[in-house]
Image (tube, rainbow, N blue to C red):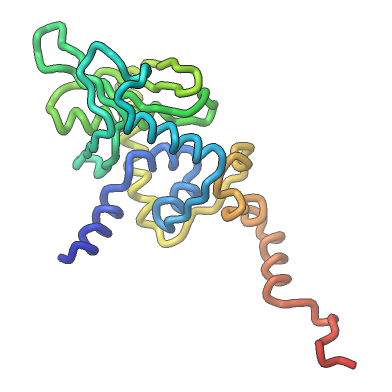
Length: 229
């Protein structure tokens, strides 16, 4: 197998952990990002990228200074869930019973929590990767808000584990589809960077879509041609 074929197989079989958050935000957006490779920057995506870049490269940030041993920009993988990605920060907390240090993944987010965010699933997916890689139980992680400089602890409960595993199965099923799923119009659509590409209101209404397609490919026949006198 060539290097290009191996890379393609990895992308298809081991999508990024962040795709879980994308999926739960909007399956159509997830498909456009992951399968079709469509990415458009807006103020939200740029701010998020810069926030992650700072934590991955800074070694003296007050947000990452703890009494624990920690690793930044850590590649993690789960062969069971077929997911891979980069953990912003993984702290290693001493086990009070004297066992191996306990991993504690910390996911960085740029702003305050929104009601349709699914960051807990992303943290849980990181915990499941770390459990598989290191052979230890990860009981909790955290989400750190760059804007407020506060962290919120996320218990890795059985319910959250089940939700994360279900999302991983749905993600792999979605990526096997030949076409993107239809949009579901929602107030959050207006904040999506792919809004101008997705056109959810237009595509969700077949009559309006068909009318727009006819007008695009069948210009007004009543218009005079350039040669008309």
